[in-house]
Length: 256
Image 1 (cartoon, one colour):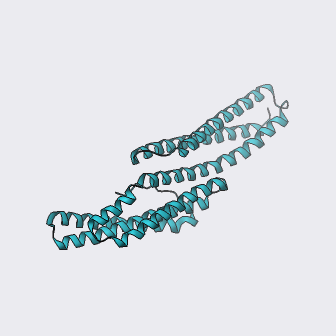
Image 2 (cartoon, helix red, strand yellow):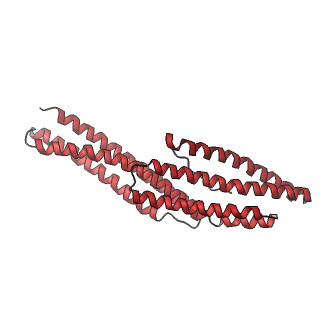
Image 3 (tube, helix red, strand yellow):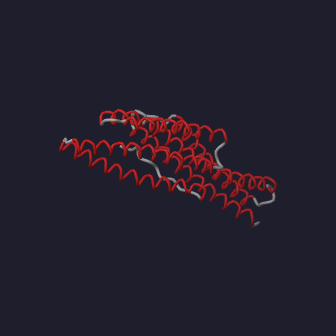
């Protein structure tokens, strides 16, 4: 069974990789259906004809499974190429993981032409299936990295504006009335609180992503779901902080 893959938003530069992935997914679905039908026919009739058909369809399915997984890894690599939020070191670490997984899949695909029986096919299939947890965790870590990169861009933009606003408040402190200064201070406190909550979530995601492993696909997905939840909350905190920052800027525009 193929591991579940997560769809990612795409930009123009990764559109071709995304389209290729979708195409390979459609092809895989058809080859898997053909394999399942042929397998059922062989188990039902046990004839040489059905055995030969089952072997052919099994080889086709195994071949396309490797192609599909490589297509998805290529899509992730394109997403990393587009990223402007991760450091070059972080990006290179993720791309090294992708390179290693693509090498594994290429070596596995190289074993398929030597399949001469259904038992051989089972053995070759198990070689990939025994690697599923590692591959699945690698994909999830890379997706988390792409999400962190997107959030990093947004937080950098926020921090630039917030720094300018705070500098303006510092320069004009004493100019505003006491009541207005109290309002400004409350907005700044709210902004800092939301920004701190955002950073706590980002720190939690980084920690969880570095430990994204598990004894099963379910374990990995459970941990990954928590990462996605934290990412959603981090984005919400940053959105709220940005809203408060807008209120602060509006307040600074007008003098009582």
